[in-house]
Image (tube, rainbow, N blue to C red):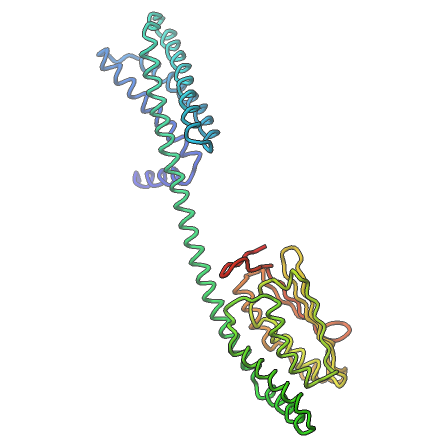
Length: 385
């Protein structure tokens, strides 16, 4: 039972700053009272209640004056060492002087003995010594607590670093998985077959320059898809440049049936985004909107920054009404790649990274992506704004 009480007391001292302060204050002045009673008893060879009362009264006054000293020390804590030493010394001498007067008046009141004023120097010296001991204890505890605080901050920083490392590893794992899935989607036989058939048709009608151009575009797109590292973040401008590699191929295939409108604010173009973020969304629009509409359609992208959040909005005009009815009948989903993006955003940004997709009343689909606005300040350094 006693061990349990001691454990609780230790926990209270360690975790409650207010209790800890009064514990050390009371302990110090209680110790000074005990020392005063013991020394006077040994000196006069008798145990006198007057000595006990005087020791208690001067301890109470001393505790009050030490609170003043504490306030002064805390107010000058951020000053230079020389300033703190000078002000602290003057305050100690002043407080010790006043406390000495109170002590001597208290003794005179208890004993009606008035000749002790001849010994004022000795009393004053002991008062200075006591408050110097209190000052040493104050600074020792203060520096110890600051050291403990720094230690806790260091441990917290290390724990946060470990959490960020685990989070980064998870993001990298998800990104690699997303890359493989997106590459399988990008490099599926349907896409390659359509592209190669388009190149073959251009060759058959002697459009060799267009066929060569499309071949180069396909090569650049495949190289970017295979070489790109999804673990890293790139600027939105670079992401859109990579996206244009894919769209250039589709523009060659669909010609005037495909219209593209990108509106990106200058500040938004410098924002960092996960690589291969927009690819599956645009491909969904190509597959379910442009390719399935006889008149083709339009893909629009708008990016802007609002309240430290990057907003990316991608819309398409949707397929023809007949095709839309067929899609609804088959309950065909546009969700290819969307789950990968959602998972990546949650891993990288938590609740700050969001994606939403909904049908437009006029037809078509809109996808909204919201990310924390980040820019690259220096190599390997990312700054949140």
